[in-house]
Length: 459
Ligand code: F6P
Image 1: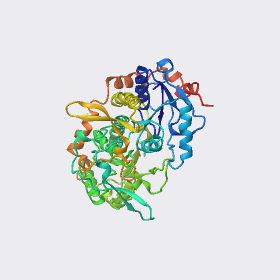
Image 2: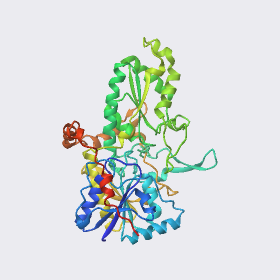
Image 3: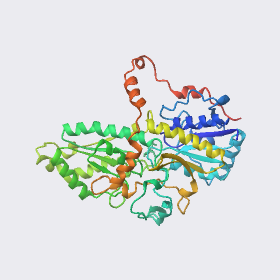
Image 4: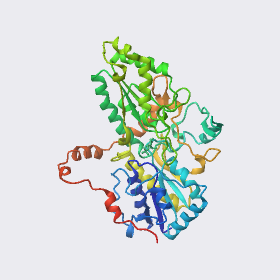
């Protein structure tokens, strides 16, 4: 193999450049040229196929900085429509014209679904990335637990049956953790800690919304910030139980901190944050305010009287306050765990392409004896009986719905990933760079400017 392509698809995550770096370094060692495609699948759909040579003469271009968040290649949520066979055929011809013999796609569940039709025509592998930590399986036969039911409007909806396994064995998890997750959790933990002191000083109830679409892994990880209550999308809200716990805690400590995963649902399955349904270009629901809706529900239940009778002469509306951690979870410098494993995964993805393992994904596995190690899996193993790949959910055995906290196993899971996730250099970077005087006199140097000078197109 002499030349491969690489692209970053879906939402950006902190360790994308580290994955690209790992892939290019491995390719240098194997004397393979790497061509970076601009803006994910949007780049391959574009007839000009904008691209950048990432290792001329087998040396990595300086713009690839594994410590920098985002992606020097640009990303998009554009995916290939499997029904458009003519577009697929054109893409394949275009890639061949550029002399590309295989494609490494860096992405999450949207990307791997989007990669499926292309992988029928062209060698593709997936290097996983996601802050949501939802790419993978709790155990290998989990995809068979999906079922389909008719929805209210006559269409079909996929539903996850109650899991066949009451508990999981951490060693069985397919793709234990994905680069991007640890950094996102680190940001959330800081956010929770900082909001805590305001809630505590002003005797308020903070409702903090974190990302994670339909999976509560980020919410689960927020437990390092010691929130009083964690709500995950996988467990429908029990409002009576929640109200009772919030009241208990408010009486005890005069403030409460609640973390809510953006995809949280009520008992009838309604997503709190999707009151006004809108979708992104990939068809994902855009969550507009789970925290706001939860605030409304709690304010209705408590009313002003609850706080008045506790000598807090403010309305429920002002005692309860919401904050979204938002896109700060996705941005900025990746911490050590993410940088290191992202680079390893990038290298592994190149090996997979070279070994001819079409439509495989590189995975990060864990065992008690060996710690973290790399492996791979055919993407087909992730598909449900209708060929769909679903985001991994927080398994019930990782979360204690009674206490609104991670279970004992959930804590073990988190400790495995996060105990040593921050490196000395991460701390040093904060110390040396935050108030570096040079920043006051130099403008932000965007990698987009340097990459623009390198972009080439096919004729
Ligand atoms: O899937 C990754 C993710 O960060 C989700 O957690 C979140 O819901 C979504 O992307 C936000 O997407 P966007 O950046 O397009 O608003």
